[in-house]
Amino acid sequence: MNRSVVYTSSPLLASRTPVWRSKLVVAAVALAFMGLAARAAYIQVVANEFFQKQGEVRFARTLELPANRGRILDRNGLILATSVPAPSIWAIPEDVSLQPVELKQLSRLLEIPVAELSKRLADDDKTFVWLKRQVDESVAAQVAAMGIKGIYQRKEYKRQYPEGEAAAHVVGFTNVEDAGQEGIELAFNKNLVGRAGSRRVIKDRLGQVIEAVGEQVSPVDGPDMQLSIDSKVQFFAYQKLRDAVLENKAKAGSVVVLDVLTGEVLALANYPSYSPAKRQNLSGAQLRNRALTDTFEPGSTMKPFVIALALEKGMVTPDTPIQTAPGRIHIGSATISDAHPHGVLTVGEVIQKSSNVGTVKMAMQMQPREMWEMFNHVGFGQKPQVPFPGAVSGRLRAFKTWRPIEQATMSYGYGLSTSLFQLASAYSVFARDGELVPVTMLKTADQAGGVRVMSAPTAVAMRNMLHMATMSGGTAPKAQTMGYSVGGKTGTAHKQEGRGYADKKYRSFFVGMAPIDKPRIVVAVMIDEPNNGKHYGGDVAAPVFSETVQQSLRMLGVQPDMSVKPQIVAQAVEESF
Image (tube, rainbow, N blue to C red):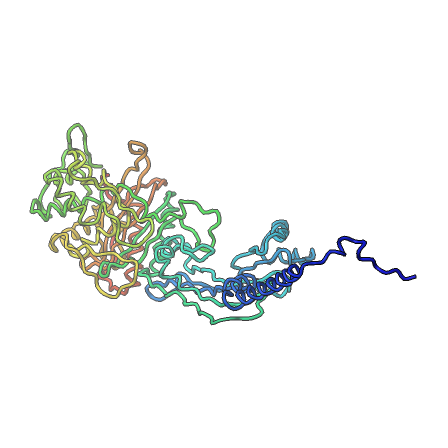
């Protein structure tokens, strides 16, 4: 039985719906669609850059194409530092699934303990983790051959240092990011790094490159840098220095070799040293470039500058007699002594015997300002003009503060401080006929122009006196060199300890030049705390000078100026401190 709907029985159905309401609903739906269409048009046509960028962030990557760091070469083009390909191994932990055998094999290849490797790969929250930076290419090839999903490689470069310990303090080293940390690597880092290139790519969710987009910017390799260092001279100087430090049971030592014609540093070595490629567990003593960073009181090596000033002022000649008896002199309440009383000495013999008394007698006839100016003009108290990290200026107090006893002690090397590098540079004044030659660590072909400090006759007279110091009766006959005439000055200084000086701790020096008539090189040697029965500069430092001079001059092609074997005196005259 069909029942008809009685609309009048339902008030809701019986009421008439206003026409405007249905129109309003239709209009609202139409406006909504129009808004969505406008928004879609705005996003896709007008302002699509933001959304395209967001999409690219998720899929597009800019890969850096590393530049090859410039090589560091010695003056003859031999390699001191170079970069070689060294891939780095990285992983996406959540994508890596290793069998125990694979884990052990990977651990062995990367030289990482199994526990440590497992820990790195267990962090699923990370999308990137380094496993091993800069491995050998053979290792990288074996890792790739394993075909482990989620483990990838990145092209990088690793520095190699063929000269090892011998040139470590000159060349320095870089960190794992290829940035210079010490030595020339740090000083000229901006010159060596080059400019990295780039490549835009699209990657899938696994990090695999599926498409290259845009143009590739090729990397620009860093330029090579050629130093003034002669790797053969450097190695020989380091070897002889090391032997001397070990033989004398010393704490440390340094040697500097300068070419006085060009101002080039041919060698700069320190011991103890380190291997730049293996820097685990290094100490500050190994890393320190002592020739440039350590300062000390130079002892008797200062006497030639005082006597040169006396000659320059016309106070004395090389043959002027000076009474040094009874071997001591009083300045105020202090007493200054010679190691042995000598009586009357000529000015030349004051250098030969290293007489404190004779030097002080000349110094006390000068104005403090005059001595200060001489010391200042040859570079004491000033930072060496070489772009090398850690180079120090030493200490030279203003002359207005000098007391008489301080003026006296400065004349034989106490009361001021210097580095071995400064001392070697200062002695170039005598080798260059009175000119101070500017020193450089970079190769140069031209003869350097110097700054006039004293007259040529004074410098020549000083060279002759320094030659006497290496002959029989001088403080350094062990500095004599087969085939070449030499001259130089010994120094033996008590080390400062607290507010005073240690009784049995010394620094021993020898600074000299060769050949004596027309010098080509200056060599400075310092042995720190010799402790094997000998401590005078003529005994422990002069032999290093002798061997270094002979080898260096041969390498430079300098013809011998002596045809007979010099007679080496077994025992040098003890020098005054």
